Length: 561
Image (tube, rainbow, N blue to C red; front, top):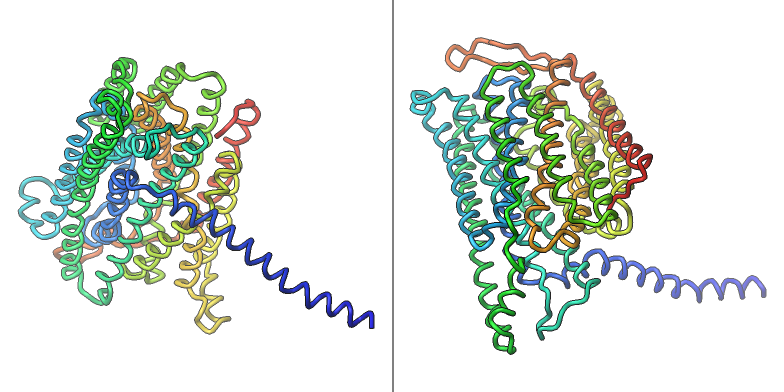
């Protein structure tokens, strides 16, 4: 009898438990997904379009990798050095951001200027592929390639600096009835705006992956000459990228006119309407420390870059770091001590996390030559990474809000290290063993796919907390300046990462096969014998360096956002 009662109680309890589980699941979905959708506003659209254009810029990444491998005799070390120079314009985002604050009313023209530079860069690549001989008659092919690689980031830097400040302008100060929005509500709106900005960028990469998947379907057996024509078509499609960003600022101007008219209809004076609609209460005074320091930086970088001084890249990095760090010290004097300490602690941790060196292009060459990965499979990996990054940013939104950046970076570092192990293992034949054991199911492509799926959300997460902090806490008339200065600092970390990658590729030399385009004779033989050591060294550095930075910040008793 007692047993029956227990069974009865158990059976009666199951529906209640199921209902509780369903309620918890619904609440989790509501907090992480549906809430973000409810917070979406039409005013967010213009900066999101500029960010979307930045995400779509990856459309040419795969064709660029294969074009360089098949048609240009450029070494891994040279490509790493070119990556360093291509990263320098992002450091110049600092003076660009301050100039945007000074000429904010002309921001639309700056976006158009950036779009023009991007268009020229893409046009060079189309001509380089379709009219190689004519281009070579003007300048060496490699010089054209370098010019294209430098022009595009300059254009994207200008557009990105405008978009960053537009995210602040997109968050309204008053509601539909003209009443001021309370600070907590504004904090949530800024978090939503910055998260959606990352979502737009990653959404662009999802679109890119889908296009690449379609374009490269069935191309693995085509000869290099026919594939080159497909590469040119992809670059032509990419010419739509600058048009999207220009449309974004056009929509922004229309929305501002409508908002101003609405406020005037509610009884606001023209001056009040202008003040509410504009991100700036009044234009800032020119900060000559930033402009002068940036001028010194440009002269310093160009002079050394054009010279044959030994270790010029290292000297440029050291000088750039000193200048940017000095300027951060100058502009943060306007903040109270607690806010300044939080900003600096956050910047240090993120800088070091982004400065971790990579393994270089040799890994992709090995994937192509040894594992047999083709453009279509790279497109599948890109689509997987982009799609899951979107979901990861939704899922981790609360995680980012509830934990400090030190904790977030620590978790990301451990996760990245764990996910680097499969590639190291594959170099030593792990995929061959798993394929034998599983009847060919768990092969190299399966392992690469699963690894990409797990690793994909990690890269974009660390930056969001700092962006939210700047949007909320930086002075109202210097938003673009703060975004730009901190972006210059953290993007300088990418230049340091490229330097570290160059050192690793010089210590552990990896070469792909290079043939003469006319005679087809082998000029450089493929050699992947040291790739395993390179992958191990990179994984160990990627684990040790970020934790060292977190330890230093904690010992110094600094806080992070």
